[in-house]
Amino acid sequence: MKKSAILLLLLFAALAAGAQPFYRKPVAPVRNVIVMIPDGTSTSVLAAARWYKFYNDPSQRMLNLDSCLCGLVGTFSSDSPIPCSAPAMSAYMTGMPQQAGNVSVYPAANPAQDIVEVESGRACQPLATLLEAAKHDRGKATGLVVTADFCHATRHAYPALAAQMAGNDLDVMFGGGRKQVTDAMRAYLRGSGATLIEQDAAAFRAYEGKGPVWSLFAQGNMSYDLDRNDAEQPSLAEMTAKALEVLDRHKNDYRDAGLRQGRGRGARFRPPRRADGRCHHARPRHFGAEFRRRGL
Image (cartoon, rainbow, N blue to C red):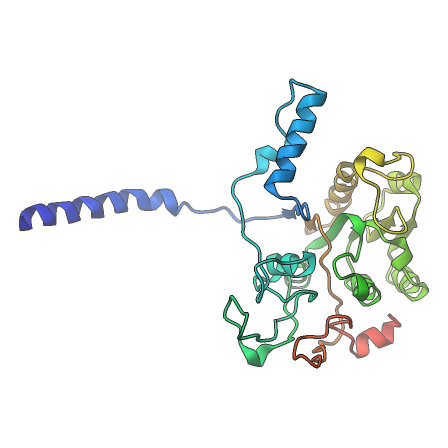
């Protein structure tokens, strides 16, 4: 019996040793990163899209996206199983689940409801994002392509987020949300050497510069593709192709994201606590001397 047990242990060890290289294959260094986030798109939405495509053309059963699918990821807030857009995207970009309404800040502890471990002493501290790391630590060109307002996610915090997006010095920003651009933001973008194209699809298509460039095609969210006027608004595919074209001219290539995630480069700022102890999310998280100097 003892010999059998030893043989079984040796067999398991041999199998594990043989399987180890399969699970630990070396990964080549990544030069560029593209993040695509179809906000609010569940598996049921994808299933409906496949059937819509099939009934319009029975020879087409699959979506272009299907070739990219390789798994599922569960998202949640730090103290709730159902996240809204802002904390869900912030979790992707920072690695830390957030509280509802917050954008890339460490959550305040909520012991009665927390579903992840939260350090109370770090409440409301800004968290660095992948985009910030790519741009400031690696010197990568960075860009965002969206079909919503460029600062979409926390609606009543739009003015604060819009100013931070301008101050983040992106190389490319394509999407909607022209109504969120203030005169101060226009002046800053011009002063920083950025090209700002406002609701002019022809100028967008004719742009051949190296960036930075902003092109906004709607006052708010862009039209759904079924309702889109191509003469006024490019498709998401066209904006993405243009973004990659511009970013590819950068000497250090790019990091491109399919959603809105950006923070300013000013002095770090800890948002004030609300009366209930949670972080106040309606003010900029970097509203320091640098932002006041820029007039944003």
